[in-house]
Every structure is written in C-alpha cells, then in structure tokens.
Length: 129
Length: 189
Image 1 (cartoon, rainbow over the protein chains, first blue to last red):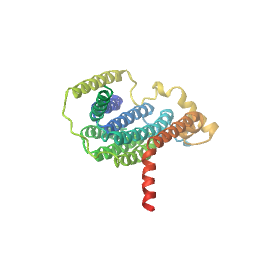
Image 2: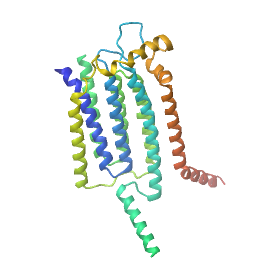
Image 3: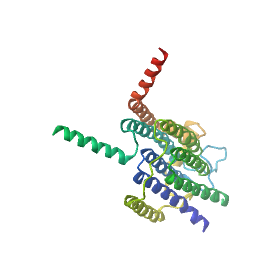
C-alpha cells in the first residue's frame, strides 16, 4: 500500500510543481517573476528525470568492490547535470534582457511596457499625418 | 526503506509549500531567497534519490550562482512588484493549469512505479555504462565517465551554449558596463 502511494506521489508533486511554474509564467506581469516561474518549472522537470533513475535499495552510481551492488541509473543524472548548467545560462540571458528592458522603458511590468509602446506608436502616427 | 519514503515525501511536500509561497510574494528579494531555498531543498531531494553529482551541482549552480545572478540583476530593477487585482485572466490561467495538471496526473497511472528494478528505463544502456566504466574507462564514478567519455559531445555542446549565452549577456549589457567605466574614469580625472 505505502509502496503504491510512494510510487506515484513523486510524480504528482512534480506535475503540480510544473503547473505552479506555468501559472507564474502565464499570469504574473513582472518579467523577473516570470523567470522565477521558469526556474521552478525547470527544477520540477529535473526532479522527474531523477525520479525515473531511482532504484529502491540501490546506491549512488559510484562503483564499490561489492559485485552484487545495485546502482541507480546514472544516465538521467548525466542528462540533468547538462540541463542544470544550461538552465543557469538561460536564466542569465533572461535577466540581462530584463535589465535592458528596464533601462529602455523604466519598468519591467508587462502591461506598462505594452502601454508605452502603444503611446509611442500613436505619437509617431500623428507626426506622420 | 520506510524512513526513505517518509524523508522523500516530506521533502517534495516542502518544495510544494515553498513554490506556493513564491506565487504570492510581492517583495522581489523574498522571491529570490525563496527560489534559492527551493533549489537547496531540490538538492536534498536529489541526494535522497541517489543522484549525488546532480545534488552538488544543483546546490552550487542552481542555488548559488542563480541566486547571485538574481541579486545582481535586482540592483538595477524595481524592488517591489506592482499590486494587481485578481481578474478574469487569472481565472483562465488557473483553469488551464488545473486541466493540464489533471491530465498529467491521470496519465501518471500509466507510468511505471518509482524504484522498481524492472522499469524500462533500467533495462538497456545503464548496465553497459556501469560495466564499461569499471572495465574500459577505470573511473569509479559512473556519472563522470559517462559525462566526459560516452556523452562527451553533449558536454562539448553544453560548453558552446554557455559560451554563446555569455557573449549574448555581454552584448546586451555592453552600454551599462562601458558607461560605468567612463564615469569612473571621469571621477579619476
């Protein structure tokens, strides 16, 4: 019984975490908060992969002298190591864009950015006329 | 075994709690610190799932460098988010997320249970990698031998991605950097 619950509990929490990340990305107006949402989404995907690699009663995949030792699957670990570092690279790029947008518009609120774009467009239109 | 399950369940639930708190904080500094905590708890979670290499990378890179980058960006950005009223767009977002979460949870009954030796993931490559690491490469840490040898091109590609991202960040922030250095030069005169 408890094995059954454990068997799917991780998946459920991972899916809910993913959706929390997605909700933050969709509904929050602040660009910085959106990057945080992406980070949450990312970490939950990492957790899903590592959960796949787990073997109950196994150890970390570092070889020992015991021949009958069961090791957890090392392949998802490698994939996720790569993904973590790439994730930080994308976060850095997103933050640089945010800083740049803040410099150009004076705000990082999505609504205010599109509003000031609209105002600029209308002024240009009137000038052309 | 039972202790492992309890620790596991506790840690994932803690992550869930932190994520829910992140949704509603308006002070940016607390958002950033909560995100750092979230990464650290994720690192603990990785240790309990036997992924020690991933755990220390997550703790140093995910919780360390990310948080520093966020704090550095915060020095240029507004410190508090604008208050926004709960409107119809939020309801659409909640509906979308709930539906997708429901579908995923429904689909999770088709996934193999966590931690079974006979899961399809464990059938093919993993055993070859473990044996190969012992017999051909000679590094006791299997993750290292896969990262640097079997999937070396992956790691090379990762390096290219980081290099590109670094250049892109420099290009985006070039004005900022050159202006501050100019101001410093004028001050020195």
